[in-house]
Image 1: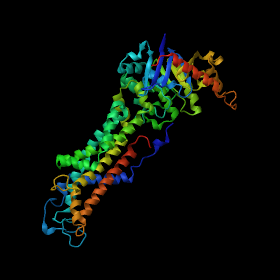
Image 2: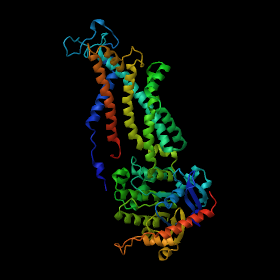
Image 3: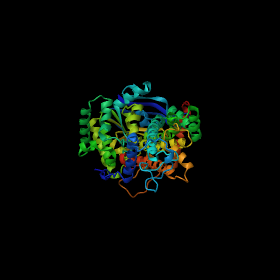
Image 4: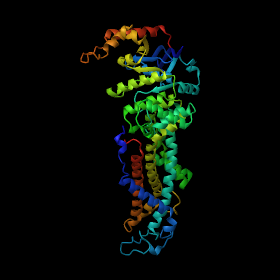
Length: 283
Length: 290
């Protein structure tokens, strides 16, 4: 009587743990940056320019990952940069998810004119070249954290809307939806109670992916100097600065790059891991 | 007086002239079990969906009426219609594997309508669900109520759906090919169970199927459909003794016989199909274009 599948112990998996560990650790470090950062991330000291990381000869004590050409501490700048990265990831990711998934769910389940309007909007939206769109938006609004978040939301909501719409359509064709409607449930209530829980695993995966994408987009915009003011340390800004001195001081570009890479990778692995774990049916 | 009456119900694909139902008239009295028989695409499921108000968006009703318990459903607002249908009708769906929400436990899926539509208290609704699972012969009903659908077998899920359909004591249940998705050994049990529940609760049943063998076991009356048109309306005993319409006779002859399991099947002759097609076309010509 009991299906054997329910007896399978689902292992959290190494990737979920590793991704969680990295993101959790980095998030905590970002929050505690003022307490744990060894140096002031903005303090320049031209006598300490291009100091190598701690294991190399000539390293300066207290500057664990070396310094850039202006003598600023790389580790401290990465930690402070993480604050901006996480802020953008969380705020832009959630907003994009809320708007995109909401529209997609309504279009996919309610169909009719709602679907028509949302689908055409998506088609039109996706015909714009996204990078140009972002640069244009920021050029008009002026650089800053708010502009970056807005640019990400405006560009990426279609990603959610498309996938969630397709998923909601597939669920809407199931017999359990018909049963709920025969039982007198209203359309809106069916959408929230019956459909939403079944598209939630998809939404969670998309959300974590989107957070990774938000981090990348922020880095790209910082790289081309369209992000927050140049005083604030950002990973993209560090990579841009490090590029100019890559032959003399590789550490200035390599450490932010590694951090960025691991963070984005962790976000996507976290999504996959969560999906495996919380999907009620093993797919 | 019959509980459900369809009067000249016609439906078409929205915006086209493609007819799906052609002046369908039939009635189901309180406690009656009526079979709705036809080939694939004859419109039998469509009729069930029209009664329950779950027609696909692409289908529109162009003429006729559905009178449920003395109320013409078309005259109600969508909201009132949903209430009316929810309070007096239920569905036993075709595929038990997709008919339960995979991310919700069984208990709320049975009790929802009792709480939402009939305004019962949750405790009372849960006791009722336990009692119903007993009626459909499910052992350990407490544990089943706490399970998710994927933890249960197809036959179990169909039993739960049957229990759920009878939960609010509806006056009419539409069973849309309830045994098609199950394997043969389970089919027989489920049929027996539906019959048993129907007799115990005295519910009228509209039994949609393509299996005349099932009709002879479960139903009292039947309507034979072809091309969205009722070609014969009869009670089961006289139908199986002597079908009135040539198409019905051919359909009956085409069914496999338990007495001769190895005998080859007789297809419906082309001449009979041609005749019934012409009958449909002739009927179309005499009716105004709706």
